Image 1: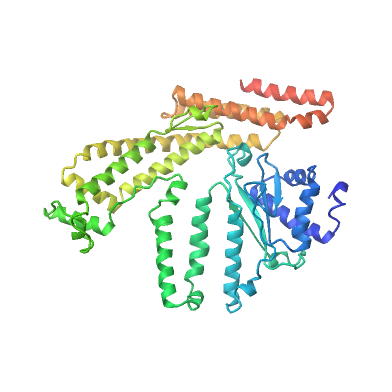
Image 2: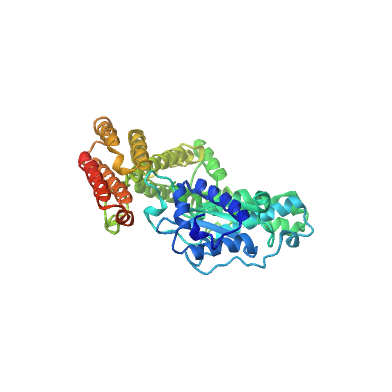
Length: 477
């Protein structure tokens, strides 16, 4: 601690606890140590110090959250009113022992884990703005926060008891729905279905709870209606159960398939008059697949300052890591679609429609061939672009005014892409890549030439730093 901070933090015991918080936060968010030092040297340190001290010494706040603000600076808080809306973790929260006095110690620990997850999830309410503050130039995601949760209030924290009295972890704040899926699968579902908890409920309650858990699991995981969309993966959903499709395929192979209704395969109680024909459902499924596949295949990346002018099938990229991630994600999504179409159930759908001479079969075959070509293209491009990521990481790990030796390897990698990547060496794609690289170099130069730092230097030293930066940019040019 520097001398200006001693007026707030004077207890050496608190310094040891702060060291735990500092080390975990920097390691988890993958930040340099100067980020913590900048936070402590912030003119608002008195407010920051009070937030830290309130959590450390007073013992009345259960949760401490440390995240990056829009300027890329660390900011601790006991609430998220600075980010989205007023939300304060209540200081009179019941202790785990009072929440579950008749429950075992193991269950109490589970409840604490859920409490930690829920408290941290409360901090995920806002979506961070699209800003370079939430992603480093080498692609490391910064859209997450670290949380520290007291197991019990009013217990002084020391270096010795920190790990026993504090639950800590991190949560992404760029994808709330993905976090919800993880919390449900790994925390809530095991907690609700464990044998110890089931004994505390009646059979009726357990039966109702099992049904609700199954519905949520189906929505989040199996059907992919939520999780599939947030993981940049396209889900080709089935409008019919897999058992129905398999029975239909058997009927087709036996030559007995006609205009059958769904109730003949699934449920005799379904109203035959109102239930749509099987063939119409199958063709509706194919139309849905064709639309999704066509949308994915037509996607392409462009560098555009004003992203509002872009069409729906164009992804805006402004840094090399964005372009690389676009092709890697595209490859994974196309591979995911291909795997779905070659799975037994999806394959059975296409076999049925081909057997009954559906008018959508030719369109499906055509777009399937386009899918295979697009997958091969994205695989090849991803292989050629990945070495470029290493070059950008090296630029981010050194001061820009001393990066002369990195320009030649960077240009060499660009030359290899132009000469060897058969799917990528077009004028439009290389133009996009070069504009991303130029923007990356300008961003790195701007980071090193901070106005505040330049004015703190001697005039000659500042001029020399600017001159070296311009030399590197001219060398690349």
